[in-house]
Every structure is written in structure tokens, then in C-alpha cells.
Image 1: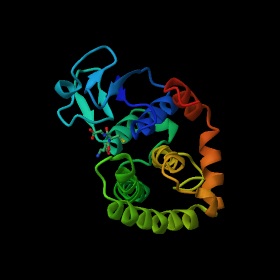
Image 2: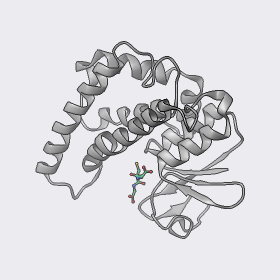
Image 3: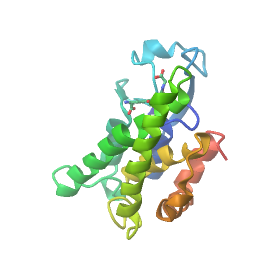
Length: 201
Ligand SMILES: N[C@@H](CCC(=O)N[C@@H](CS)C(=O)NCC(=O)O)C(=O)O
């Protein structure tokens, strides 16, 4: 498998999950401005959406959308418990978290990385982040990870979006549970390895 990624972007979550899975994989960086991959390929021809993450499977198929990619990887290695089994209630809870992180968190960070975003849009997004993160902090207060005591793919995604806070002047210190969570996830060997491979640490 090959993961197309941009250092520190939402593709980091899929990268962490690949590391956690223990499966063999490669990574290739994408320049999102020129849409060229590190080897000089036209990324738009590989993924018509033009954004990361994208996972090229061993059979040549391409899978896009982080939550789908992460679930695919998790389902290849059920013994690693990166996602609850497909018919378990906990799987729907996981889907709920992936959707929440994608739509309520990830996409409220997006205007801060968009030079065309207005200050009104950014202010509205920051207010949303404030409310949503307060909710997550309360949820995580008595837990190790989002679904309880076991690390899973939603944690890889939440860790990744929380790592953007320092770039946008969002101080996580007002939620000590989130800061502790971030350190807990960040200390995992797979997270360290993925971040190192992307040149983030
Ligand atoms: N819905 C997509 C969103 C992916 C996304 O927002 N990717 C960003 C990086 S975090 C990107 O590649 N942006 C560049 C672009 O849209 O051209 C997913 O969940 O995978």
C-alpha cells in the first residue's frame, strides 16, 4: 500500500493508523500547490479530488477520504483492535466520532489554512471549535481514549486535528483533559514514528 500525504495534514491520521497496523506500506509526499508527488507524478491524475489522504492498495485501487482509509486499514488487522467489529454498536459510535471530527473539528480548522478565508468566517469557525472542543474535553475527562480504554482510529484523527491548534492561536490549555490526551496519544511509538517520517519531530 502507498499513502499519499502532506506533512502534518489530515493524512497524518491515516499514516498513524498504518504504523499502528504493523502492515507494510510506503508513503509519498504531495505538493498540494503544484499537485505533484515527490516522484514527480501528477497527483490529480492519481486522485481526481486532488487532496490527501489517498491510499493506493496493492491491487492498484485507490481509496480516498480519511475515515474510509482508516477503517479499511483497521479492518485488515482486527486483532489490533483499531476499530470495533463492523456489526458492533461500538462501530456506530466510532462512525459518529469520525464524522464529528471530520465535520465539526477538521473543517472548522480549514479556514485558518485558507488565505481566502474572511475574518468573519474565521471568527465563526473559532467559536464552533471552542464549543466542540469543550464537548470533547468533557467526554474524554474520565477516559484514556475516545471509545474508552483502547486506542483506535478516531484517536489518530483527533490527535491530528488537535495538533493544528498551535498554528492557529487556539490555546488548548483551557482544557487540561485535552492536553493530557494529546500527550498520551503523542507518546505512542506509532505516533512518534509517523511524525518522525513526516519530519514533524
Ligand atoms: N474529506 C477529506 C478532506 C481531506 C482534506 O481536507 N485534505 C486537505 C489536507 S488536511 C487537503 O489535501 N487540502 C488540499 C486541497 O483541498 O487542495 C478527508 O476527510 O479525507
